[in-house]
Length: 204
Ligand SMILES: Nc1ncnc2c1ncn2[C@@H]1O[C@H](COP(=O)(O)OP(=O)(O)OP(=O)(O)O)[C@@H](O)[C@H]1O
Ligand SMILES: [Mg+2]
Image 1: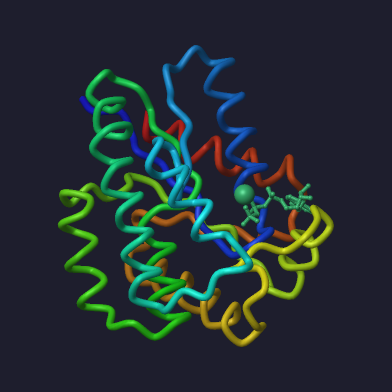
Image 2: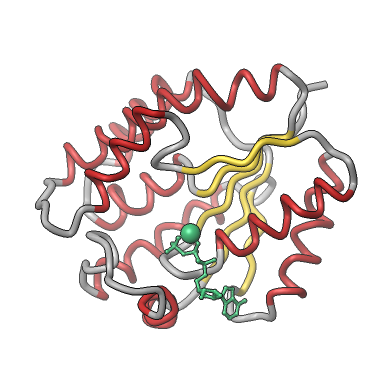
């Protein structure tokens, strides 16, 4: 049996990286072989693409923005995620294709059918077994993220954009309730980690 592919999604500052680290620690404690990665990034190409995508000095139109994320994703799926699953490792990824659908689709207004078609090609149809959606008012998330330092290119987008992104994630989750675990990201870190661990254990 192939181990589960788990993704963390949600707006800026929702606590994805925090919860991902907690989950990785639980998996390590339980002796479960696993691999942690992130988007954009996770490969030498992806790391370079990430620098471009987050650079506040660059203006990037919606279509090239989506294509850059897709380039990073294609490389990550082929060279990191699929090989790890084939080795029997649980894969945990900080953001994945749902972020493109939410940000470039709902947020920037690119056509959903085109995004879905290209994403299927890019991922070879690899869909997560579990997607943890940390849902949060974008104003709260951006202020959490701001406490970390200078905002990146996406954190500088307007609140209307981030509100559409949040709505996009919730729409995606409503369409696929068996895959998504939607959590209120204002809850306590330990309580969230407990809920996430229970959902992961069910899939191990
Ligand atoms: N449940 C929580 N309650 C309050 N603060 C939290 C919670 N989870 C995380 N934080 C804090 O919010 C900030 C952002 O958390 P984190 O970096 O994990 O979010 P993220 O979703 O990965 O953000 P980004 O989208 O920017 O990568 C951090 O300072 C973190 O300590
Ligand atoms: Mg993060």
